[in-house]
Length: 264
Image (cartoon, rainbow, N blue to C red; front, side, top):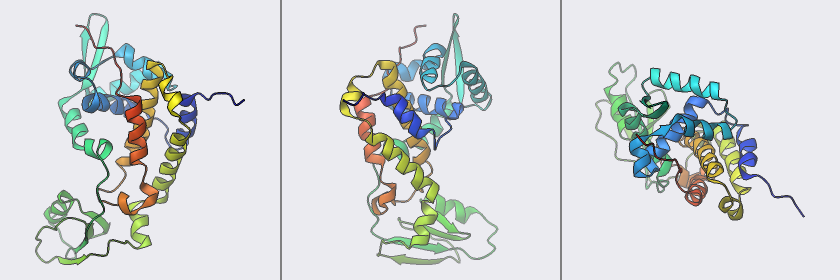
């Protein structure tokens, strides 16, 4: 009879090969998750230093590393803190919440459907005004080579730009490699392997602390991957990138972070 595995430690062992679990980034993932998916009381009250320390300790993060990361995040304007007696409570700053909401769809939303056509835009050489670049990026275009952009939506009207459209949605290998480099594909494969080791029975038998920790480490690795993907609908046509649905199924099974509300 095979011994039952520890799902948290098992997935940590697999993900540490691709992620060094930078403490400040893990904290942003946790607070961002509370902001987007948390219960109303958690969104309003933030997370206490004690609760934060418990979750991070379960990931092998030392208290001193947590303190350094919190200091850095306050200094950089990502988080704010409030004192309630001897208790410190942390929450995202207004700017931190705005940045979190700006990328929420890329992390929590569904994959975009396959495009109906591609648009290729080549800007005039030696363009000094970057308004054309900004206009293309705002429309979801991705720069393939200097001055050459690929997009799926209708391109903006730009002076002196050369524009082509193609209804063949297959992309050459060199374009797919540029949009999804090998390191990104390797990280996705590692995440898929880690997820495949989780069973429904293991997830239902977790303590609240382990459930929180597993959700956090899975979400953190997925967030790192999702934010490195291009803002183009390439997941639907690139099988190597298709891990979003698997991640969302596990996150749904784990449920939102269960953090005790802070009592003022």
